[in-house]
Image 1 (cartoon, one colour):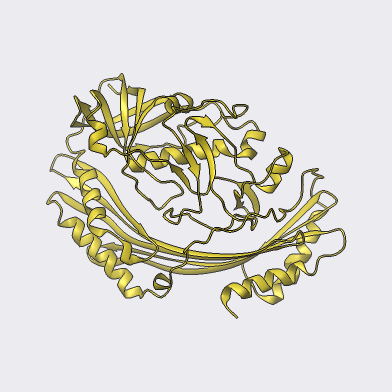
Image 2 (image 1 turned 180 degrees about the vertical axis):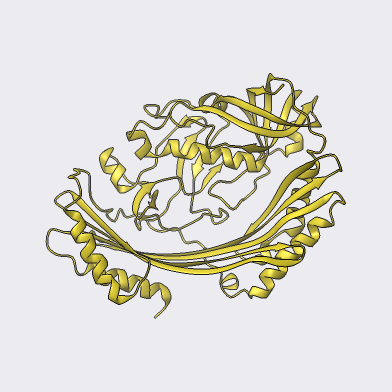
Length: 447
């Protein structure tokens, strides 16, 4: 029996023990990760870890009980089920409580599991991280390495419910990253670079090395700029971070709780017509691609904003029942029980390179890095303020480096003030893609 079939069989056997009047969900998983850090040609840190778990949810008379164990040992499963049943009595009555039900949406066939990665030798993983460090050091004499890293992960999950869901999925992926320090004798600046893939043979180590060196060396000699309102050009990595900040505002659960600035705005223009934003975990290029959501329903492509118009919110089965709509296959496991989240956000790209976009900016800033982004954004009001560093843009040319300033606006205004989207798509080890993004009329606070 394959590993996947074994997990599904286990979930099925748990659910088969349901008593009359009980709704039961079994969620079983197995996964692992490798993390390698290289410093000065030697292994500084190495972790290879495996984990497995089972979560059982029991719903009866509107009350929910949940229990979890970090093992799939048969001797523990009955105890977990008994604990979930016992916890029902402590739950509050919730008229919307219930399990997801099959909705007829088929899984999109994807190649999310790579056998080459699953059997890739540890020695070669270490060699890749060492080579990344070596390549990065060779880019510029001013560069030192903070760390060079190789990371991979795999996961398998299986669901079974008394409502008729049976689903199994598995995926794996890997990435390398390098952190740099540029030193010219007077100051030190930091940089980073990434490369992702389903298998290590897909890595572009040279590009990751060059980006890490460029990000650090470009900021040498940076000064604090004068305050003004200006146009900003977000680097692809910063755009991905920006999208992730937006993600919670599309959660139907957050909308229902009054925690989204998009509430009551369905069908309205919320962004420049250039903006089409989707959540598409069925795109295998996305590092967080998957074929099932956190309740075992098929993952699917959901259009959030189309040509500037807010089209829909994302839902789990619970938030969908509460909002009298349908699940969008967007459930995630948070603390064991399902929540709602974007799975793989993607801004539909334009066609220009970053250089072509910058050439259209007479007075602006290329934002290379941001600090404190999540703490500087209010998801309810949309207020946006974050520390940043980057390069001045004058008459379409990148110029002097600047640091120790903040950029501020509101998320509502920033979406409306988008004036160009790059075609330089970057797939990063996170739940959003990146590309250059030009936004007008942002306040830069410096000296």
